[in-house]
Amino acid sequence: MRFGIYAEMQCPDDKSHETVYQEVFRQVVYADQLGFDAYSIIEHHFFQNFGISANPLAFFSAVAQKTDRIRFRTALHTLPFHNPLRLAGEIAVADILTGGRLECGIGRGHAWLFGPLNVPLEESRPRFDEAIEILIRAWTEERFSHKGTFWNFEDVAVVPKPIQKPHPKLFTGGTSDITYQMAGERGWGIFVPPLLPWAVLEGPLDIYKEACDKAGNKPDVLYLRPVYLGDDDAQIRREVEQAVLNFLKFNASPIFSKPPLPPKEELIAKGYGFYASGALEGLTKLTYDDIVKQEIGFIGSPQKVIDQIGKLQEKGGIGELTILANFGGIENWKAIKTQELFAEQVMPAFRGGISTA
Image 1 (cartoon, one colour):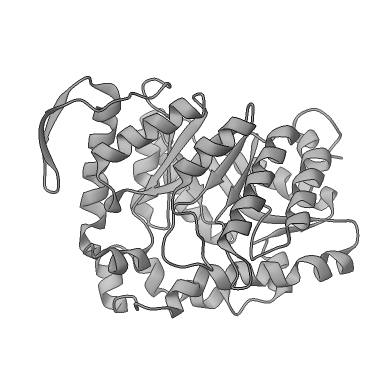
Image 2 (cartoon, one colour; image 1 turned 90 degrees about the vertical axis):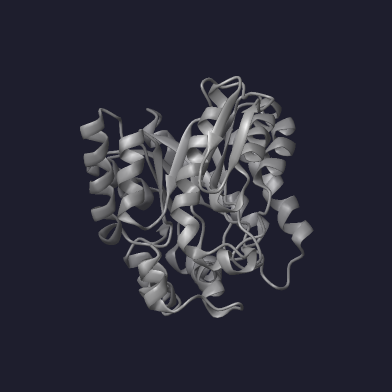
């Protein structure tokens, strides 16, 4: 099993944008030293509490100069908002500057991003599908032409090409069954939302694994969980309770912001039923005890978390446990502490270093 870290770059109102970037930069450098396999950052815009990672490729290109081996992964590029020809070249540049350590998550984007960007919600899926075709051709063909619904061009060459051949590894993620089906058929890795308990994720993941099996592909599930470690439950709670509550509050914050989302009926009809389900609003009502009990967060002693990961392994298909150490505006020292304890006391249990008994 691989072990990675994921950050949304959530920014509370009392912390500057510059401080968030400086802290996460240092955390990535330390994650590389500790032996984590990958660092994933979302692409997101417009909503500070949710995340201020508007240009993950620029961040990866910078931090790659201070790291040696850790891989970098966008989770996810929001394809309906990009010109895929330009994005293909930008990804190739980042692959070069990271020394071939780049991986690409691609997705349709959160429903609340379409209004500010003036892209019709019903175009999310067809734009996504067409952009995928263009990206892959841009990376694998010297010159090509395309005539589609949203983009048309004749005899273009996208340069530079990525170091990795035929292109960086691809992932996707989301909440709709069609996404899990497509990922399995194409042989992509899949991110699962870090907000939902296993009981909610089991059905979509079964669709993904079955699609992988039919297509002859190996499942590669990236299971995301906020993590906080310690030896005393009371002290852990004092240190992390507000941050983990903020994590859920910040994830749901665009629901309550302007501009408002479309009506529920429209969201459902246009493939964004999750945002009409009330699930995000419900997350803000969970208590700390709910979060721990439902394993929305892996919070507790290293041995407890080892046991939780072991149970995940038994379900099959989990390629990487991707932890969130920086969430909800947590203090930098706490994120660093989580990374360190996880690397020293949890990861060795799955890499032959210590017993899991």
